[in-house]
Length: 136
Image 1 (cartoon, helix red, strand yellow):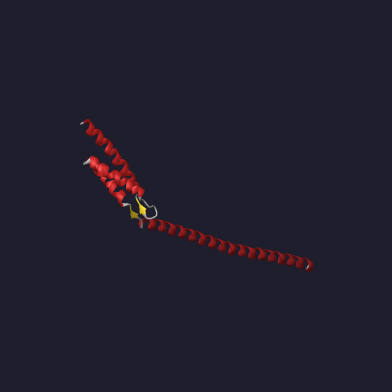
Image 2 (cartoon, rainbow, N blue to C red):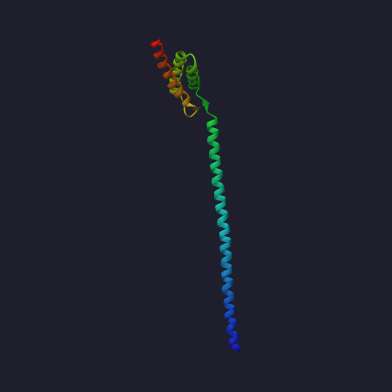
């Protein structure tokens, strides 16, 4: 009986050691998983911060640009020319639109579209007013 008890005791001791080994490796895995989660969170946070900084930099860069003055004036004259003073405003809008496009610097200026629109609408005003004058 003593041998039987002793063998059962040895078996139980071995089982306890296996469980303890399993528990310690589970604890190590848990610690490792916690470390991995922390690294992933910090990486995601760093990436989000970098993206936010890039967006802020793009916004500040576009806010620091000057307006293309010739393009702006061309756009204004072309809009005025639609409602009144068509031919003179069309001529001014076309000339200033050409100058605005030619002198546009993308690094320091914004609103090139105004110069292009002023040129196009001014040219249309000149053609329409020329046809109107020739008909009347």
